[in-house]
Image (cartoon, rainbow, N blue to C red; front, side, top):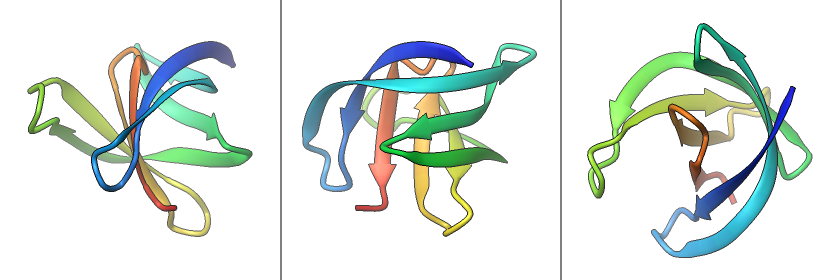
Length: 81
């Protein structure tokens, strides 16, 4: 897994700041992300950030918590805390 420092935004759209995450890529797309001691897996859903227009990938944990990350995992949006 690759270690990446990412910018994290919470459910309410507030920027939390930089955090370290661990990412596994397949064909330049994130397929596994470890964030806050939780492992997230790609769901196959691809979208776009309404704020920036950048492509995003939905990730889900086994407990159905969700996050979204961009192509390089430089940004992460939480929807689970």
